[in-house]
Image (cartoon, rainbow, N blue to C red; front, side):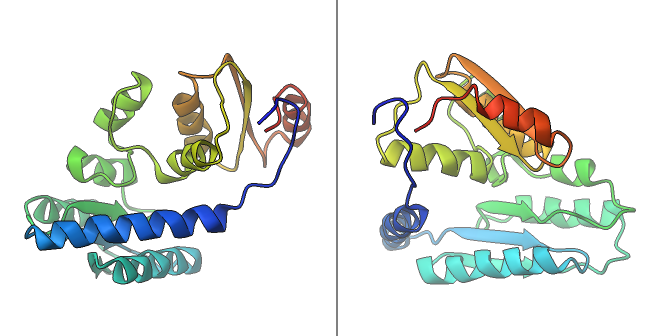
Length: 210
């Protein structure tokens, strides 16, 4: 796609293609004797989190992936959640663990996230996975930035040598997205929408359209 030509990317179409591919991969794993498993920990009563988790469990069901939802009481301590995570780390039928944020305010979310085994860290937040991201090595990457790259690749959009502008609602998204593209683009500018609206508009003027 020529530089300077803007277009709308059909994310729904790409998502459907990916779902079909994953379903086939899951089928092959099941035939080989292992059904992939996801454990989701949802502590608290955040409505948005409940919707998000419900969507993930529905997707697992459609794909043939085993899933379990754990809902510790809101008064659960940091140690309670760490113990739960550690028990899931030891289970062979659980391949991925998702800690749904935000956790209750009295819980040390960083400690809970760090307790997830790196190979089961589906969010890609563990320092070992972040380290692989920084050094451009294969590993588990945060899903939204990874999804954006997949969307670009499947639309045959070349980002090498481009100027990338990352506009995000959170620092986590902005930083991880910047790290993912930094190995290909010549310049990365990041902006947090809710804090720097004017600056973000200025920064966007410096990015290459695609």
